[in-house]
Image (cartoon, rainbow, N blue to C red; front, side, top):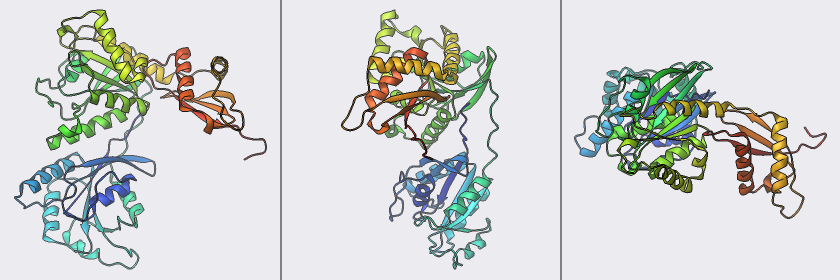
Length: 445
């Protein structure tokens, strides 16, 4: 089963010590703003990192000034405090060129009260072999300072070794019958109510106030020989409407839940329908290979509950996101219990589809049929031939097709083959992937 590690590392420190530069270096991109002016990072940024086979989340924060009364500094301080609360390891970044400052000492005082593992990291050191500029930071009394240069990448490997060593142990592999189910959706659509109805008790706080569920809570349920672990997550909001610092961490937890899920239940309000954010999270789950079920909640409150209403809503969704045509929609009421049991059946069906494997001979028979109906488009040069195929993995089901010219296969033809394989083999609610490889010539290594 898919299981992503939810361990988190927070990078904190005074303004302009290089936190965003270090964040970008660790996650391997430039998703955080880097500027020489203090205070460039006012919101948090997060991204996935991996080192020596261990994956973890990294959170960038704004510059921390513990004693400042300025409104912006107070807001950033709240964000940093939330980052530390959510973190398994804190990287406390200091500026080796400045040396220890009273602001650094104030941050150390705060960190000591939090009880989190802390890595003290001295940045902006170009000559690591000859440097002694990190040694004065021993006076802070919070551990050995690790010298690095986030700008050039020097010392980052050693720092990553320390980060991974400080993380809590990775969760053990799940039992074979366990299915992780992420319950996601916008605020106040009834996610907690649905989980409570399914498990038969009020384990999660239910309120009409949007954003009641701030954290992700795992709730196990035994059903038809399988253990379903439901993860109820905070409501999704568009980034432009994340007004409170806690909402950032709600978004982070939601994305972490989707990443470690086998099946994602996207809960909608029947009256409100699908919003842009719903399409976004559904697409995110689909792209990373997670199974998907759409649960249309509050169906009992809809005035015109005709079959045509459901059909039109689904048709509109598929027009906007064609992949949803392969996804089961369940129309229910978490309040009354109407059809909620069908969600469990849909989850099991989708989980089984993600595990389904087709024999190679059957794949090739289907491939011959598809090619006979529609040949691959021929471009200038050598002929494009599809030679044979096989399913190479599951969760999600992935097919490799050997061809004479993989670079000449158009995206439209790849979609044609993928849809043809789905028509023949099902895979309801599960993404499938089709990859093309070149035929190896005899004698080649």
